[in-house]
Amino acid sequence: MENEAHNNPTNFQNIFKLAQYYFHMQQTSRVITLFDQALAEPGIPPDDIGAIAQFYAQTGNLPKLEDTLEKLAKILPKQPEPWYDLAALKTVLGKKDEALQDLHTSLDLSTARP
Image 1 (cartoon, rainbow, N blue to C red):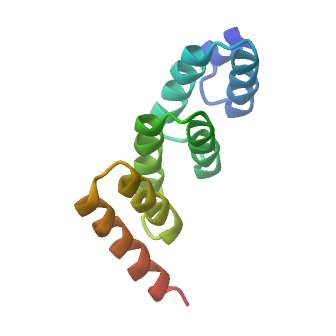
Image 2 (image 1 turned 120 degrees about the vertical axis):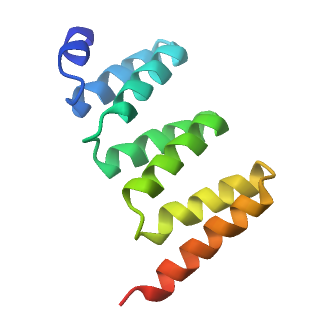
């Protein structure tokens, strides 16, 4: 799986299998490195970014969660959910002004939905 991840960094199914293996082996730093590489790929699907965000939320890595949610919001700029999640996280992080701005964006997008 490591060779496949190195040779084909856009095989996200393999990336997640390898990350799961690393996690079970308690090699969290290797999971983070793997996810950093995956997030750097321009074609990473939004669902995969969401899965990475869930990992960071579950493991309590709030700085990485913030970076991941920022990327998701940029890839899905017209979807209110990533902006809402980002606003909630920034509230927890004490970034009140940014949280209010992201919440405003989320509410505007939600209101604009047909």
